[in-house]
Length: 103
Image 1 (tube, rainbow, N blue to C red):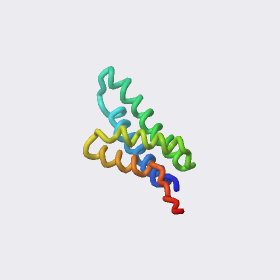
Image 2: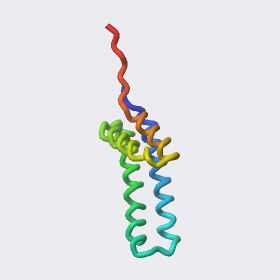
Image 3: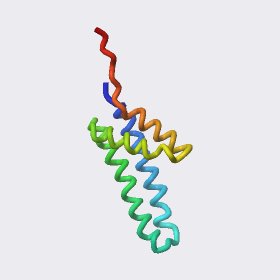
């Protein structure tokens, strides 16, 4: 039995939208410093595209999408409390589930 690909695709799709709005809104509305003028546009593109790419890979049930989702879930874990919950959900839903074969 494989990982829960449809759920992973939905989670990463919504994380992509959330990160686009959280990083994108300050890019266009705030008076930014010089480093902010470089940093925010990059994060506005990089993080959402990462999540959308993983969502697409999970949608087509690619093993690379499962592994990338597992890595992102592991990276989210230190960001308590929301990151820990999201990271644990991604980490647990991205692992392969093996069925015991009784002989």
